[in-house]
Length: 154
Image (cartoon, rainbow, N blue to C red):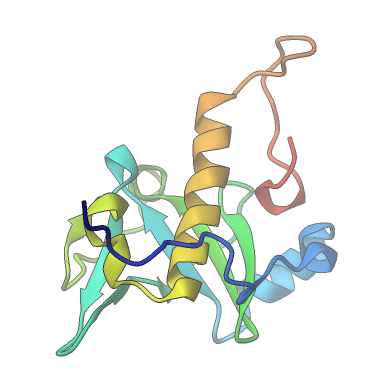
């Protein structure tokens, strides 16, 4: 049986940037940087992709509006701050998610076409959002959790 290349979810290209995620003021500053980007996550874990002439890429778009705790901080790639959030939550807040040129696709379908850094970004974004969606209550006391540290704690 033939398999594609190995998909490594940790290429080392994404700086998790713990110092920024531990400080709400630093998160606001990162959000307002001109190169800050957000990755929308659609229903069923579908992600937006951009179709270039020679390749497919994750559809990271410039942040807009105000930052809230629902925007999870992924870290920095090439110095640029990266966030992710549910496309459904964005729509509920009146933020439109433009239709990407490569469409909304499940990562299993296209991940082999992505760079190691894009795979790492995708993996961290899906892990954080899935965790918060699947664990809305504290295992300790059953109370609703509050997103903290840019999404890395609750």
